[in-house]
Image (cartoon, rainbow, N blue to C red; front, side, top):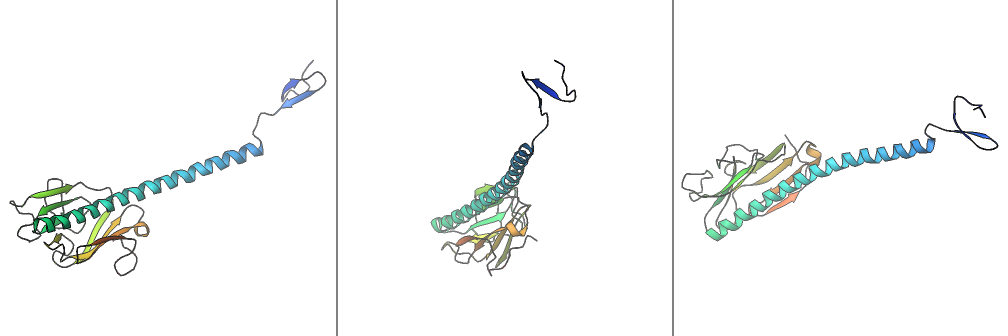
Amino acid sequence: MNNPYPSCQCVAHPSVWRCRQTGFSLYDLIITSAVVGVLGVGAVSMAELLQATRTTNIVNQLMGNLSLARSEAIKRATPITICPGTTSGECQAIRDWKNGWVMFSDTNGNGGLDPDEPILRIEQATNLNTIKFSAWGPGTGRWVTFEADGSTKQNGTFTFCDERGATKAKAVILLGTGRARVSSVNSSGGSLSCS
């Protein structure tokens, strides 16, 4: 029997001809659109999660180093300084700590790394845009020195910023007692700034 519908791909049945559809149904399009939408949102959320995790890891790394420097100052009964530095163990006279930092036994307490002062730790560069330290006291953000009693003369705020900007920034607030805490606002309770 000849196909009465030449434009369709037809299946012959004993009594009737039925055309098999070759396109997509509305149901197929709705399901496909929903799956693509979920995957697209998931990809954006995953990127956001990865950035947040990286920033949190660096915040925790600095918190650990501040805690270690404080405990070493108490244990050794000598000043311990952390400064923004390079992988070769040199202090940089800047307030942006994104390129890493150096911890050393600051026996003369001048905030600078001298040839006879032992380096305790060197941290590598981060993948953040900035880690700014706005501080009051000696060095004004270019170093932190913990005294033998665990206190510090520099109190201020480390602000951690990545590509997401100030709305997603994190802070570590350092008090003169030597204690540090993580915050999403500055020490006055205001918004953080990445500039």
